[in-house]
Image (cartoon, rainbow, N blue to C red; front, side):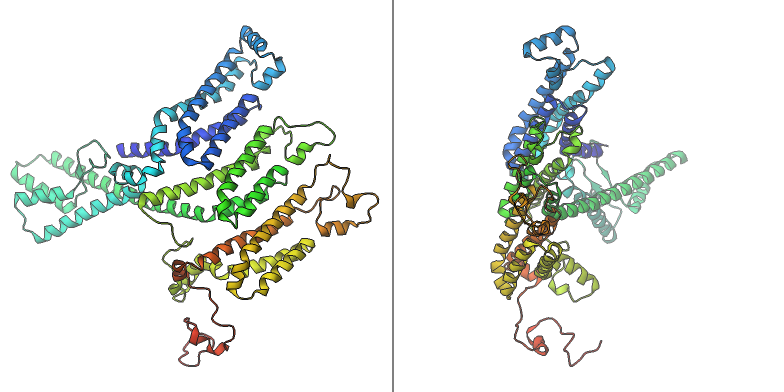
Length: 598
């Protein structure tokens, strides 16, 4: 039971902060949106932004943040509760100089007794959750997430037990090796000596005091033959026991064996579950950039979302800008949440809608996409820090290539169908990424058939004109920059200019003779027929694949990747096809003239 208790405590230490974050959303969006709930969301967004920008500062600030949340929640509860008394409501109205409507916007309302209970129940629950975290889990959470002290902690046996990377293997290997060593000695050494029996018993004992798993006496995962030998040895030294006592002793030993076997099976299950966790974390580390960027481009077109797209359009091919893109996206979400209640106009032409702000009765539904972007950006940073923590703790270095099957290399490609499939799951884009990008470029041209499709065609011709792979690799960063600029400019075209800035565009003036089809082909902003923003998805997919291909070009210059995946160097473009086997290390299945037996 103490083992189970330690595991539960470890889970609470790791994940209780997520419960606190979930309660932040419940408190902020439950019921009518008032000022004190907006302050809750501002506090939460500031914490998330600091977490993404600077991890160590966030850890230092975290304790004071939770203390401020507890104090603020207490003040909210006190104000809401005391406002129910007529004398206090008049007092706050005079002190703040606000009428009844203004106090309602702050969140100070008079409720019936039943309604009052439901109104203060959620803030009270949130206060309790924060106090529990601050009192019981905060210090241990900081110890757990300290990247500077990971190497020093990994030697602790208790640490290996609580964190599953080392505990499962330690317990199972210890018990199995002890039993095997003892059984081998049983066959070799003579039995009957008291010292030998004592040594065997000590070998079979799996000491649990080192791991602090239980406070009971040490017990052993013993072999049935050893148990029966020991019982007969002890029984011969005593008088013959009663039948009931002997049966109860046998039953107790059997139950011990069942519990031991179930324990080993449970630990094995946890070991396999932990391996699955590691695999999922690795998959997320590989693909989180694609997930975040794909979701950002799917969000509706507005000026606020332009900050998201522009930052990530250049962060995809240029990885050094990705931390800046994450923090910029979080700042934009904070701006939108704060301004959502204040920057609203009632004129005939509302510039707030053009900015990306709209008055909605369902604020949570209105902000759903932006909140999901914020959650994805925070999750992205969490994945990278989790993997860094895991590698520091296990003294591992990052893999040379982002692949799924680490035991499959170029030498395994021609062994069989299974190895063939695994190899191309690992290295398909490494081998055929350039061809995929060229096909996507042709797809963009065919889907759009407008002025920007013509620009894509010219760019594709410029890339293809280089012909050799090395030459294409040299010009590829410029091609990625061209695609990023095209995407950001077209997004701005879809936004257009504010409706109140001018009466109409020049190509829509009464004196203009520009045809609507020409305006559509030029893909220019228009109040009558807005540009089709769905075209941006085609451009984004091309930019994403081009960014991945730029990484492939960088990997081709790494010796470790070439050893695993093989090189992408052309053999020679002037050789006769029948003479390829002289230069190609792979067996030739087409132009073989001798010993072809298939």
